[in-house]
Amino acid sequence: MRALVSPVLLLLLCALLHAMSMTAAADTLSPAAISTGAAPATTAIVTTGANVTTSDNHALNTHPDIDSRLDTLFGSHVRYQKFLAELQALIAAKDWPGVAKTLAYPMKIKRAGHSIRLRSPEDFLRRSGSILTPRVQAAILNQTYASLFANADGVMIGDGAVWFSGICKDAQCIDPALKITAINP
Image 1 (cartoon, rainbow, N blue to C red):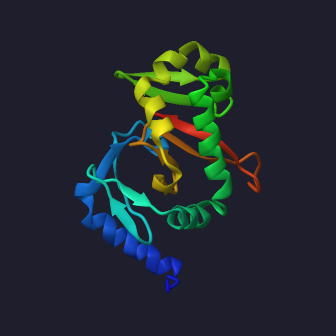
Image 2 (cartoon, one colour):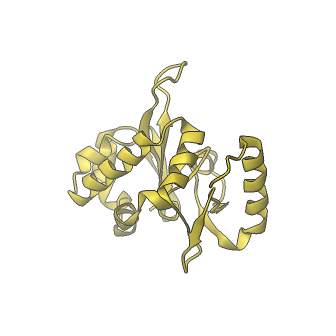
C-alpha cells in the first residue's frame, strides 16, 4: 500500500535528492534561464515515487508519478499529456503551421552563439528549418509521457530541447493556454 506524503515533506525530499544527485543532472536552458540570458542551468532529474534510471541517468516516471507531479504543479495532468501527444502528431506530420500555433510569442531562441527573436508564427515559419532541427524533432517524437520532467518552469522534453507550460490569458489565470516556452536547438 502506498503512503501519502505531505507536500512539505515531498519538497524537502526533492531538495535532498537534488543535492545528492548532481551526477545524474542534465545541462539545459530552462525558460527562466533563456529570458535572463543565464548560462545553462544544471537540473537534477528528480521524481516522486518509484523510478527507474536508464543508462544515460534519466529517471523514468510511471504514469501515476508524472500524473501526480503535474497535478501538484499545475492542477491537472490531462491537458499536459494531451499537449505532448498533439505536438508529437504535428511534428510527425511535419505540420509547421500547426507547430507555429503552439509557441508562446515573443520567444528568444539561442542557436550557434546568436539569438533568434520570434515575434509571430510567420517569424517561426521563416526560420523553422534552423529551429526544428533533426535533434529537436527526434527529442519530441521520442519523448514518452511517463518520462517527462516537470518543475515550476514547466515541462521539459528531451534533455531540454523543448519546454512547455501554461501561459495565463488574464490576471485570474483560470485556464492558462499550454504553449511551447523554449526551444533549444
